[in-house]
Image 1 (cartoon, rainbow over the protein chains, first blue to last red):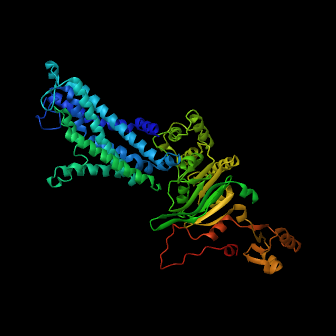
Image 2 (cartoon, each protein chain N blue to C red):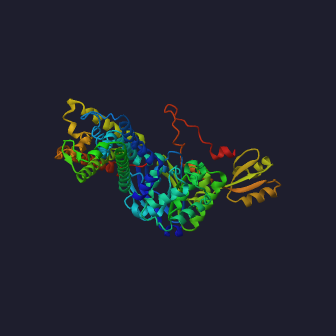
Image 3 (cartoon, rainbow over the protein chains, first blue to last red):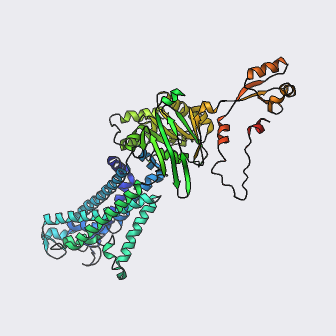
Length: 273
Length: 327
């Protein structure tokens, strides 16, 4: 079932259109920065954006910070929200199940396809951002030929930078896995893929709103978006692990809870669409 | 009958019940389909046919009761049972953006037993069987209702199943299409496939099935061999231009009549005919009256369950019974 889902994903024009749209925003930002040379002042705007004008190789990270809060979760919620509800709405769910595809196998295949989509989107964003960063931005680091500066102001060697960038992308993908599991669960409960996607986005928007509210302080450590941007801490020297670790555990908890809920809901569901 | 009871059971349910909240959709039914049957599953819209079919296939889980398909319990043995079953449930469905051929290949690849080497050939065979052998690469989205129906049937045939479960298979087909599908089903049955067809079209069931089950509001009100259901009624139906003369001659055995037809209580049309002709009554047509499936079903069921009468007016319009039709 996994190869079938992947083939559906990769052959679908929508997949590539969505990735192109996700990719468009950081590309546009890179062009604007290059043309105007007006970076946000350090400490303001999306993470790393103030640094990319001096060092273009940091632009993949800046691009990640641009797409992570909104674009990527929307795309993930739409893709994973479609999993069961989309098949049900098309009428193909009953034919999948009598083929037979086991219900657990179907869920796993859908989740894997959603995550492949995320990885693909993240890779495309990173690759584009790297190329644009090197071509359009950060001429200064080339002339200076000095090592990249960490957020804390100390120097990072290139292998260290690559390793940390990899970790950052891994962390972002884990955050999206959490989103995908919520959407997958909702997809087994509601009747339309849109309801599953919007339900998921509702949770994320609610989480973001509550994070700005001091009165909700007691909830903050459990909100799904609380530690999303913590990957920035990977570029401090030494790495500030606290939020990364908490974020990882929190996302794993979301994955376990919602995947379990999705399984429990779907395994006993009457398929009457 | 002895030949029948020797054949193994293809589908059996025991007090199968499904409740959706307060609504009992299927109420303690005991189906029995033998291998080699063409089993017609009849019932008005909303009588529970589709829910029952879905329970046979493990899509809907029974509230209580047992389901056995091809000798194994469902839904627990779905891994062994379903690969031997082809199904069309409540209309066909496919990925609209893909071609019919690609859809079949994709569905075939989904389950572990879809042998890759023979896939293209099996897809072609299935399309050929349902009359879509020459179909082009247009996406299913652009198919007509009849083409979709045929594609759905091809999907059910892809694995050369032992048991075919078809819910309203001729929906959306024109009369030629219906006849083609009927012929295909009989062909498959002759080759050993057990077929369960659910339909609300009596004529369709009457022309294809060997055995009939009738659902009414979730209950199985009738289950029998079609030939037994359609046994002669013990009456002779005849038309004659000399109705008055015939009436006088046959007297009290005439059950009903109008200005050219008579219904006579007598099992033997030949004897009645001889009497009439000997007395100079001209007979246009004469035959033993045979119960039509429609009469049997209507007698066993109440009005369609998509009908909701107001409780303050409990009287439904009475169905015309046979006497009225004849008289």
